[in-house]
Length: 181
Image (cartoon, rainbow, N blue to C red):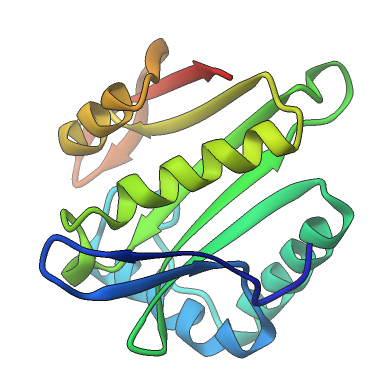
């Protein structure tokens, strides 16, 4: 798929217009700032160390190639000309090629406004276009808001890895949720 392609425009609960689109190279600085802001916040994401611009460029390059090959789908949420959220849907390989793994991050000031739900709905549409049969995601057991949002969209808890996450001197479970398409 082409980079920078607009898929949807939404209006958030607080009246802000947000564009959901595929990423482009020009997003690099925004995406670097986004992931690093979540690391600083100590958000419940898989990364706990900041990335350099070069590291993010390497990652973005691989993701854009995957997007062009149809191996995955990357979606950017843009508000006021800035990338404020991103979601990746990656096709697994081999015997698991009918399964996609999903991840979503949103800048702190834009959470709980409907952006995450819109992103998830768009990613599920893309999963169908990719002929995926199952979509999985992983989250911290303490992220109850996200857990309930995923449930509302038809995801079910299908696994739990006890004490898989060590954060702030505490062990937390990693929850695996699944949706059949």
